[in-house]
Length: 383
Image 1 (cartoon, rainbow, N blue to C red):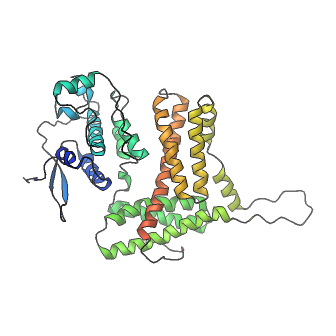
Image 2 (spheres, rainbow, N blue to C red):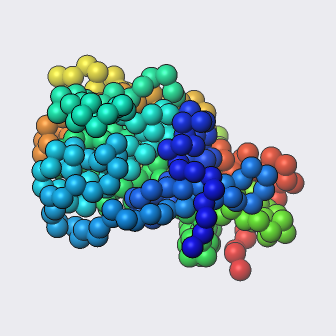
Image 3 (cartoon, helix red, strand yellow):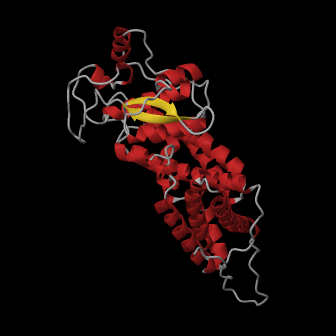
Protein backbone atom coordinates (compact mmCIF):
# COMPACT_ATOMS: atom_id res chain seq x y z
CA UNK A 1 0.00 0.00 0.00
CA UNK A 2 1.31 3.45 -0.88
CA UNK A 3 0.55 6.67 0.99
CA UNK A 4 -0.36 9.46 -1.47
CA UNK A 5 0.28 12.67 0.46
CA UNK A 6 -0.54 15.04 -2.37
CA UNK A 7 -4.29 14.90 -1.88
CA UNK A 8 -6.89 14.38 -4.60
CA UNK A 9 -6.79 15.71 -8.15
CA UNK A 10 -9.97 17.67 -7.36
CA UNK A 11 -8.19 19.41 -4.48
CA UNK A 12 -5.13 20.10 -6.60
CA UNK A 13 -7.28 21.76 -9.29
CA UNK A 14 -9.02 23.90 -6.65
CA UNK A 15 -5.63 25.27 -5.62
CA UNK A 16 -4.18 25.67 -9.13
CA UNK A 17 -7.53 26.77 -10.68
CA UNK A 18 -6.69 24.81 -13.86
CA UNK A 19 -3.94 22.58 -15.21
CA UNK A 20 -1.16 23.48 -17.61
CA UNK A 21 -1.02 21.58 -20.91
CA UNK A 22 1.85 19.31 -19.81
CA UNK A 23 0.06 18.45 -16.55
CA UNK A 24 -3.16 17.82 -18.47
CA UNK A 25 -1.42 15.31 -20.75
CA UNK A 26 -0.13 13.43 -17.71
CA UNK A 27 -3.55 13.38 -16.11
CA UNK A 28 -5.17 11.85 -19.15
CA UNK A 29 -2.56 9.15 -19.47
CA UNK A 30 -3.79 8.00 -16.05
CA UNK A 31 -7.48 8.64 -16.73
CA UNK A 32 -7.39 6.40 -19.79
CA UNK A 33 -6.27 3.53 -17.55
CA UNK A 34 -9.50 3.77 -15.55
CA UNK A 35 -11.95 6.19 -14.00
CA UNK A 36 -11.66 6.36 -10.22
CA UNK A 37 -10.49 8.66 -7.47
CA UNK A 38 -7.26 10.29 -8.63
CA UNK A 39 -4.59 10.86 -6.00
CA UNK A 40 -1.21 12.61 -6.05
CA UNK A 41 2.02 11.03 -4.87
CA UNK A 42 5.46 12.64 -4.76
CA UNK A 43 7.29 12.27 -8.06
CA UNK A 44 10.83 12.86 -9.30
CA UNK A 45 12.31 16.35 -9.11
CA UNK A 46 11.44 19.27 -6.84
CA UNK A 47 7.72 19.80 -6.57
CA UNK A 48 7.05 16.87 -8.85
CA UNK A 49 3.95 14.70 -8.53
CA UNK A 50 2.77 11.41 -9.99
CA UNK A 51 -0.88 10.72 -10.58
CA UNK A 52 -2.31 7.57 -9.01
CA UNK A 53 -5.56 5.87 -9.99
CA UNK A 54 -6.85 4.61 -6.67
CA UNK A 55 -9.72 3.76 -4.33
CA UNK A 56 -12.04 1.48 -6.25
CA UNK A 57 -14.34 1.06 -3.26
CA UNK A 58 -17.44 2.07 -5.25
CA UNK A 59 -16.21 0.77 -8.59
CA UNK A 60 -17.72 -2.13 -10.47
CA UNK A 61 -16.90 -3.83 -13.76
CA UNK A 62 -19.45 -3.43 -16.54
CA UNK A 63 -18.99 -5.12 -19.89
CA UNK A 64 -19.99 -3.21 -23.01
CA UNK A 65 -23.75 -3.57 -23.39
CA UNK A 66 -24.29 -4.57 -19.75
CA UNK A 67 -26.66 -2.33 -17.78
CA UNK A 68 -27.12 -1.47 -14.10
CA UNK A 69 -29.38 0.74 -12.00
CA UNK A 70 -27.53 1.07 -8.66
CA UNK A 71 -25.91 4.44 -7.86
CA UNK A 72 -22.12 4.29 -7.55
CA UNK A 73 -19.32 6.88 -7.55
CA UNK A 74 -18.95 10.55 -6.64
CA UNK A 75 -22.14 12.42 -7.59
CA UNK A 76 -20.32 15.37 -9.21
CA UNK A 77 -18.83 13.04 -11.82
CA UNK A 78 -21.91 10.87 -12.36
CA UNK A 79 -23.50 10.66 -15.76
CA UNK A 80 -27.10 11.97 -15.87
CA UNK A 81 -28.49 8.46 -16.39
CA UNK A 82 -26.71 7.27 -13.23
CA UNK A 83 -27.68 10.24 -11.09
CA UNK A 84 -31.32 10.01 -12.16
CA UNK A 85 -31.32 6.24 -11.46
CA UNK A 86 -32.01 5.24 -15.04
CA UNK A 87 -30.48 2.18 -16.66
CA UNK A 88 -26.86 2.80 -17.57
CA UNK A 89 -23.91 0.97 -19.06
CA UNK A 90 -20.14 1.40 -19.36
CA UNK A 91 -20.53 4.57 -21.44
CA UNK A 92 -21.39 6.40 -18.21
CA UNK A 93 -17.63 6.40 -17.56
CA UNK A 94 -17.12 8.46 -20.69
CA UNK A 95 -19.25 11.23 -19.19
CA UNK A 96 -17.12 11.06 -16.02
CA UNK A 97 -13.96 11.44 -18.12
CA UNK A 98 -15.54 14.49 -19.74
CA UNK A 99 -16.24 16.02 -16.33
CA UNK A 100 -12.60 15.45 -15.29
CA UNK A 101 -11.34 17.05 -18.53
CA UNK A 102 -13.72 19.99 -18.10
CA UNK A 103 -12.55 20.47 -14.50
CA UNK A 104 -8.88 20.32 -15.52
CA UNK A 105 -9.42 22.94 -18.22
CA UNK A 106 -11.70 25.40 -16.45
CA UNK A 107 -11.11 24.80 -12.74
CA UNK A 108 -14.63 23.58 -11.98
CA UNK A 109 -17.03 20.82 -12.97
CA UNK A 110 -19.71 21.61 -15.58
CA UNK A 111 -22.50 21.23 -13.00
CA UNK A 112 -20.64 22.52 -9.93
CA UNK A 113 -23.03 22.52 -6.98
CA UNK A 114 -22.99 23.09 -3.25
CA UNK A 115 -25.50 20.35 -2.46
CA UNK A 116 -26.57 17.06 -3.93
CA UNK A 117 -30.09 18.39 -4.52
CA UNK A 118 -28.74 21.39 -6.43
CA UNK A 119 -26.76 19.02 -8.64
CA UNK A 120 -29.84 16.87 -9.31
CA UNK A 121 -31.90 19.98 -10.15
CA UNK A 122 -29.28 21.13 -12.66
CA UNK A 123 -29.21 17.70 -14.31
CA UNK A 124 -33.02 17.59 -14.51
CA UNK A 125 -33.15 21.08 -16.00
CA UNK A 126 -31.62 19.51 -19.12
CA UNK A 127 -29.53 22.58 -19.83
CA UNK A 128 -26.83 22.26 -22.45
CA UNK A 129 -23.27 22.41 -21.14
CA UNK A 130 -21.55 25.52 -22.44
CA UNK A 131 -17.81 25.55 -23.21
CA UNK A 132 -16.36 28.73 -21.61
CA UNK A 133 -14.72 31.09 -24.10
CA UNK A 134 -12.44 32.57 -21.43
CA UNK A 135 -9.94 29.73 -21.86
CA UNK A 136 -8.45 29.04 -25.29
CA UNK A 137 -8.49 25.32 -26.10
CA UNK A 138 -7.67 23.44 -29.28
CA UNK A 139 -10.28 22.32 -31.77
CA UNK A 140 -9.43 18.69 -30.95
CA UNK A 141 -9.89 19.31 -27.23
CA UNK A 142 -13.25 21.04 -27.71
CA UNK A 143 -14.42 18.25 -30.00
CA UNK A 144 -13.54 15.54 -27.47
CA UNK A 145 -15.07 17.49 -24.57
CA UNK A 146 -18.31 18.13 -26.45
CA UNK A 147 -18.65 14.49 -27.49
CA UNK A 148 -17.92 13.18 -23.99
CA UNK A 149 -20.46 15.47 -22.31
CA UNK A 150 -23.49 14.42 -24.33
CA UNK A 151 -26.44 13.87 -22.00
CA UNK A 152 -27.82 10.99 -24.05
CA UNK A 153 -25.56 7.89 -24.01
CA UNK A 154 -26.55 7.26 -27.64
CA UNK A 155 -25.01 10.59 -28.70
CA UNK A 156 -21.85 10.15 -26.61
CA UNK A 157 -18.52 9.24 -28.17
CA UNK A 158 -17.84 5.50 -28.21
CA UNK A 159 -14.90 3.90 -26.41
CA UNK A 160 -13.30 3.02 -29.73
CA UNK A 161 -13.56 6.62 -30.94
CA UNK A 162 -12.33 7.90 -27.58
CA UNK A 163 -9.13 5.85 -27.63
CA UNK A 164 -8.44 6.91 -31.22
CA UNK A 165 -9.22 10.59 -30.72
CA UNK A 166 -6.63 13.09 -31.96
CA UNK A 167 -6.58 15.01 -28.65
CA UNK A 168 -5.36 11.96 -26.73
CA UNK A 169 -3.12 10.79 -29.58
CA UNK A 170 -2.58 7.45 -27.86
CA UNK A 171 -1.70 5.97 -31.23
CA UNK A 172 1.65 7.81 -31.17
CA UNK A 173 2.50 7.27 -27.49
CA UNK A 174 6.20 6.43 -26.93
CA UNK A 175 6.89 2.68 -26.99
CA UNK A 176 9.24 0.14 -28.54
CA UNK A 177 6.43 -0.97 -30.84
CA UNK A 178 5.87 2.59 -32.07
CA UNK A 179 9.60 3.09 -32.59
CA UNK A 180 9.60 0.07 -34.91
CA UNK A 181 6.50 1.42 -36.63
CA UNK A 182 8.18 4.81 -37.13
CA UNK A 183 11.28 3.18 -38.61
CA UNK A 184 9.12 1.12 -40.97
CA UNK A 185 7.20 4.20 -42.15
CA UNK A 186 10.40 6.15 -42.80
CA UNK A 187 11.96 3.26 -44.73
CA UNK A 188 8.80 2.99 -46.85
CA UNK A 189 8.96 6.77 -47.44
CA UNK A 190 12.56 6.47 -48.59
CA UNK A 191 11.64 3.75 -51.07
CA UNK A 192 8.80 5.86 -52.46
CA UNK A 193 11.17 8.82 -52.62
CA UNK A 194 13.64 6.82 -54.71
CA UNK A 195 10.83 5.87 -57.10
CA UNK A 196 9.95 9.59 -57.39
CA UNK A 197 6.50 9.06 -55.87
CA UNK A 198 6.96 12.25 -53.93
CA UNK A 199 3.43 12.95 -52.75
CA UNK A 200 3.10 9.51 -51.13
CA UNK A 201 6.65 9.76 -49.77
CA UNK A 202 5.92 13.11 -48.11
CA UNK A 203 2.85 11.71 -46.35
CA UNK A 204 4.84 8.74 -45.00
CA UNK A 205 7.67 11.00 -43.83
CA UNK A 206 5.09 13.00 -41.88
CA UNK A 207 3.47 9.87 -40.46
CA UNK A 208 6.86 8.59 -39.34
CA UNK A 209 7.64 11.92 -37.67
CA UNK A 210 4.35 11.73 -35.78
CA UNK A 211 5.73 8.66 -34.00
CA UNK A 212 9.30 9.92 -33.64
CA UNK A 213 8.56 13.28 -31.98
CA UNK A 214 6.85 11.88 -28.82
CA UNK A 215 9.59 9.24 -28.56
CA UNK A 216 12.27 11.94 -28.56
CA UNK A 217 10.37 13.99 -25.99
CA UNK A 218 10.09 10.96 -23.68
CA UNK A 219 13.70 9.74 -24.11
CA UNK A 220 15.80 10.32 -20.97
CA UNK A 221 19.20 9.12 -22.27
CA UNK A 222 21.06 12.13 -23.78
CA UNK A 223 23.02 10.01 -26.27
CA UNK A 224 19.95 8.19 -27.57
CA UNK A 225 18.05 11.47 -27.70
CA UNK A 226 20.81 13.06 -29.81
CA UNK A 227 20.86 10.13 -32.26
CA UNK A 228 17.08 10.26 -32.64
CA UNK A 229 17.18 14.02 -33.18
CA UNK A 230 19.78 13.70 -35.93
CA UNK A 231 17.68 11.09 -37.70
CA UNK A 232 14.52 13.13 -37.37
CA UNK A 233 16.28 16.22 -38.71
CA UNK A 234 17.30 14.28 -41.82
CA UNK A 235 13.74 13.09 -42.46
CA UNK A 236 12.32 16.52 -41.70
CA UNK A 237 14.71 18.16 -44.17
CA UNK A 238 13.68 15.77 -46.90
CA UNK A 239 9.98 16.26 -46.21
CA UNK A 240 10.49 20.02 -46.46
CA UNK A 241 12.41 19.62 -49.72
CA UNK A 242 9.50 17.69 -51.21
CA UNK A 243 7.06 20.32 -49.98
CA UNK A 244 9.14 23.13 -51.50
CA UNK A 245 9.30 21.27 -54.81
CA UNK A 246 5.56 21.79 -55.24
CA UNK A 247 6.31 25.48 -55.61
CA UNK A 248 9.44 25.29 -57.74
CA UNK A 249 8.62 22.64 -60.37
CA UNK A 250 9.77 24.04 -63.76
CA UNK A 251 7.33 24.38 -66.62
CA UNK A 252 7.48 21.49 -69.11
CA UNK A 253 9.59 22.22 -72.19
CA UNK A 254 7.55 23.02 -75.28
CA UNK A 255 8.43 21.28 -78.50
CA UNK A 256 9.63 23.43 -81.40
CA UNK A 257 8.01 21.08 -83.87
CA UNK A 258 4.70 21.91 -85.47
CA UNK A 259 3.08 18.73 -84.19
CA UNK A 260 -0.55 19.25 -83.20
CA UNK A 261 -0.39 16.65 -80.41
CA UNK A 262 -0.13 18.34 -76.99
CA UNK A 263 2.95 17.85 -74.81
CA UNK A 264 2.28 15.21 -72.15
CA UNK A 265 2.89 16.63 -68.64
CA UNK A 266 5.71 15.08 -66.65
CA UNK A 267 4.87 12.60 -63.89
CA UNK A 268 5.92 15.21 -61.32
CA UNK A 269 3.60 17.85 -62.76
CA UNK A 270 0.77 15.31 -62.80
CA UNK A 271 1.37 14.70 -59.09
CA UNK A 272 1.17 18.44 -58.41
CA UNK A 273 -2.02 18.73 -60.43
CA UNK A 274 -3.60 15.88 -58.44
CA UNK A 275 -2.55 17.54 -55.17
CA UNK A 276 -4.09 20.84 -56.24
CA UNK A 277 -7.40 19.16 -57.10
CA UNK A 278 -9.91 19.14 -54.20
CA UNK A 279 -11.00 15.73 -52.99
CA UNK A 280 -14.19 14.10 -54.23
CA UNK A 281 -15.56 14.21 -50.66
CA UNK A 282 -15.00 17.98 -50.54
CA UNK A 283 -16.63 18.56 -53.94
CA UNK A 284 -19.72 16.57 -53.02
CA UNK A 285 -19.99 18.33 -49.67
CA UNK A 286 -19.63 21.76 -51.26
CA UNK A 287 -22.59 21.01 -53.53
CA UNK A 288 -24.72 19.97 -50.54
CA UNK A 289 -23.62 23.13 -48.66
CA UNK A 290 -25.36 25.43 -51.15
CA UNK A 291 -28.27 25.92 -48.72
CA UNK A 292 -25.98 26.72 -45.76
CA UNK A 293 -23.80 29.86 -46.17
CA UNK A 294 -21.99 29.18 -42.88
CA UNK A 295 -21.05 25.65 -43.93
CA UNK A 296 -19.94 26.78 -47.37
CA UNK A 297 -17.79 29.56 -45.90
CA UNK A 298 -16.11 27.19 -43.43
CA UNK A 299 -15.42 24.67 -46.19
CA UNK A 300 -13.79 27.34 -48.35
CA UNK A 301 -11.54 28.32 -45.44
CA UNK A 302 -10.51 24.68 -45.02
CA UNK A 303 -9.81 24.38 -48.74
CA UNK A 304 -7.65 27.51 -48.57
CA UNK A 305 -5.74 25.86 -45.71
CA UNK A 306 -4.95 22.93 -48.03
CA UNK A 307 -3.54 25.34 -50.60
CA UNK A 308 -1.49 27.19 -47.97
CA UNK A 309 -0.03 23.83 -46.92
CA UNK A 310 0.92 23.03 -50.53
CA UNK A 311 2.69 26.39 -50.68
CA UNK A 312 4.57 25.41 -47.48
CA UNK A 313 2.97 28.26 -45.54
CA UNK A 314 2.54 25.93 -42.59
CA UNK A 315 1.67 28.42 -39.84
CA UNK A 316 -0.93 30.12 -42.03
CA UNK A 317 -2.31 26.73 -43.08
CA UNK A 318 -2.57 25.59 -39.46
CA UNK A 319 -4.40 28.78 -38.44
CA UNK A 320 -6.83 28.33 -41.35
CA UNK A 321 -7.44 24.69 -40.45
CA UNK A 322 -8.21 25.73 -36.86
CA UNK A 323 -10.62 28.41 -38.04
CA UNK A 324 -12.38 26.02 -40.39
CA UNK A 325 -12.63 23.20 -37.87
CA UNK A 326 -13.81 25.57 -35.15
CA UNK A 327 -16.70 26.59 -37.41
CA UNK A 328 -17.46 23.08 -38.67
CA UNK A 329 -17.70 21.32 -35.29
CA UNK A 330 -20.95 23.05 -34.18
CA UNK A 331 -22.40 22.58 -37.66
CA UNK A 332 -21.69 18.84 -37.49
CA UNK A 333 -23.58 18.60 -34.17
CA UNK A 334 -26.60 20.29 -35.77
CA UNK A 335 -26.72 17.92 -38.76
CA UNK A 336 -29.36 15.16 -38.52
CA UNK A 337 -27.89 11.72 -37.88
CA UNK A 338 -27.75 9.41 -40.88
CA UNK A 339 -27.87 12.23 -43.44
CA UNK A 340 -25.51 12.18 -46.40
CA UNK A 341 -24.28 15.70 -45.64
CA UNK A 342 -23.43 14.77 -42.05
CA UNK A 343 -21.41 11.73 -43.17
CA UNK A 344 -19.48 13.79 -45.72
CA UNK A 345 -18.90 16.57 -43.20
CA UNK A 346 -17.63 14.15 -40.58
CA UNK A 347 -15.22 12.62 -43.09
CA UNK A 348 -13.96 16.06 -44.12
CA UNK A 349 -13.42 17.12 -40.50
CA UNK A 350 -11.42 13.94 -39.81
CA UNK A 351 -9.33 14.56 -42.95
CA UNK A 352 -8.53 18.15 -41.99
CA UNK A 353 -7.82 17.25 -38.38
CA UNK A 354 -5.25 14.73 -39.62
CA UNK A 355 -3.74 17.32 -41.96
CA UNK A 356 -3.48 19.82 -39.10
CA UNK A 357 -1.81 17.15 -36.94
CA UNK A 358 0.76 16.52 -39.69
CA UNK A 359 1.60 20.22 -39.78
CA UNK A 360 1.90 20.38 -36.00
CA UNK A 361 4.22 17.37 -36.09
CA UNK A 362 6.49 19.03 -38.65
CA UNK A 363 6.55 22.24 -36.61
CA UNK A 364 7.28 20.28 -33.41
CA UNK A 365 10.17 18.53 -35.13
CA UNK A 366 11.53 21.86 -36.29
CA UNK A 367 11.46 23.20 -32.73
CA UNK A 368 13.09 20.04 -31.38
CA UNK A 369 15.95 20.29 -33.85
CA UNK A 370 16.65 24.03 -33.77
CA UNK A 371 19.61 23.48 -31.43
CA UNK A 372 21.17 20.63 -33.43
CA UNK A 373 23.35 20.62 -36.52
CA UNK A 374 21.42 19.99 -39.68
CA UNK A 375 22.01 16.58 -41.18
CA UNK A 376 22.13 16.74 -44.97
CA UNK A 377 21.10 14.30 -47.68
CA UNK A 378 18.25 11.87 -47.76
CA UNK A 379 19.61 8.63 -49.28
CA UNK A 380 19.50 6.96 -45.90
CA UNK A 381 17.96 3.83 -44.46
CA UNK A 382 17.34 3.15 -40.79
CA UNK A 383 19.31 0.13 -39.62
